[in-house]
Image (cartoon, rainbow, N blue to C red; front, side, top):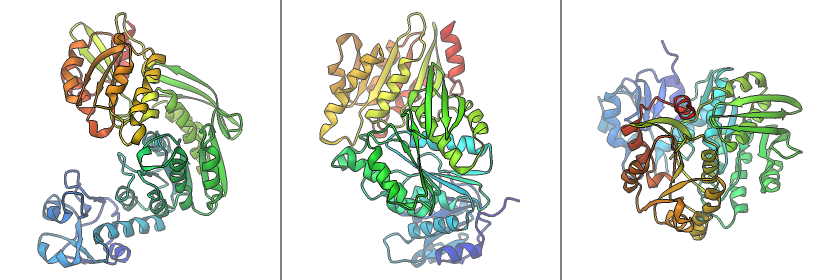
Amino acid sequence: MTTPLWTPESLEAATGGTLRGNPKPITGASIDTRTLQPGDLFFAIRGEARDGHDFVRDALARGAGAAVVAADRAEEFAGAGGLLAVSGTSEDPILDAMRALGQASRARSQAGIVAVTGSVGKTGTKEALLHVLSAQGETHASIASYNNHWGVPLTLARMPAESRYGVFEIGMNHPGEIVPLTAMVRPDIALITTVEPVHIEHFASLSAIADAKGEIFSGLSTGGTAIINRDNPNYPRLLAHAHASKAGRVVTFGEHEEADVRALRIVMRPDLSVVDAVVMGVPVTYQLGTPGRHVAMNSLGVMAVVHALGADLARAALSLAALKPPVGRGERTALRLKEGEAFLVDESYNANPASVRAALATLSGIETGPRGRRIAVLGDMLELGASAEDHHRALASAVEAGGIDLVFTAGPMMRHLFEALPVSRRGVSAGVSSDLVDPLIGALRAGDAVMVKGSNSIRMGHIVEALKARYADAVDRAESAQAAIRQ
């Protein structure tokens, strides 16, 4: 039998709530009935459009171990199943209870806890840490991008007491948002991947973004480790935040000659990268199963975390060779056309100036067939404020530098990039992503490499889904595509 995640006594003690009905053993936690698993503790939190109490009966019918509900509404669900009735003075006592349970989870844990933030690469770095640490002990981590005011406490509440490592992604859109999240996580190690003009419309300057990212160090446990990108221009500002925290030491990574974890050489290949590095004085060479210079740079941060945890560097280096990109963040798929195969790179999860430039650089290194072209399909980048037009237009230099043959764009902002390109590089510019599907399919030919990227709300994933549905078996990845292209 699976060990319960929470006992009835610990639930009541952590949340101050009262159990009613007949709760089942709690083996997980959920806020969404669509993904709820039997044994989950369902939190009926209030969302932007719906109140979680509307789904309590459905959650219990689906096998939830119990549902966390407001005490003044508990009678509505009498007889439906186990309930944890909670009260409070805030607008959402359910969210308060989830935070309290998360804090109780952190208090009981003996795991090495890592928190990751950054303008670019935080999810990929979190996934890389989950990958390498799981080979060395039970590792708990945020799923997807659960990095906000409900995602962080939910991830904490799900952490098994016996976990050896915990990896938490922490995000923000505004100043001050990271402080309460890192206070809950209380990381032993906090890593900032980089600082770039992301969500810039909510900040006065790039320095202000650096200050917001630097908030992650405020939650460090006494004597913890702050890990900073030494190559970033905002390094001095981040260092000041680390020194103002409870950090016992600061570890830097990058190509800078003073970096503690330093890349001596990065060899870029179409479907992988090789990194020669020095990790705290120890020479380490490793292969990355995920291509891209930005991925290689973030892998240095991963190695810094591994060293700070006292985990095995050699095993981590070996594990990185099997690291594959998650869906929407560089996943590669073979597209079977009648006359041969093309190659799809799915970067559709999100976009900002730094990540689009990195994706274009990666696309430029992909081998194409004899008549193949490198095609970028780009959607608007959001939250760039008054400088949005300039940020989009400036991508033309990255298109040129990467030797991108053809560019399709979706959205009014990307129209500025489209118009900045020479006619020979223009594909089609559309107002919405769905209007690019047919023109892109019509233009695609064997040997092409296609990269799709844009901010979430632009729905560039629709294009990826359409291409896969028409041309690909979704399980096909880079190996088959690259083999076909090289023939």
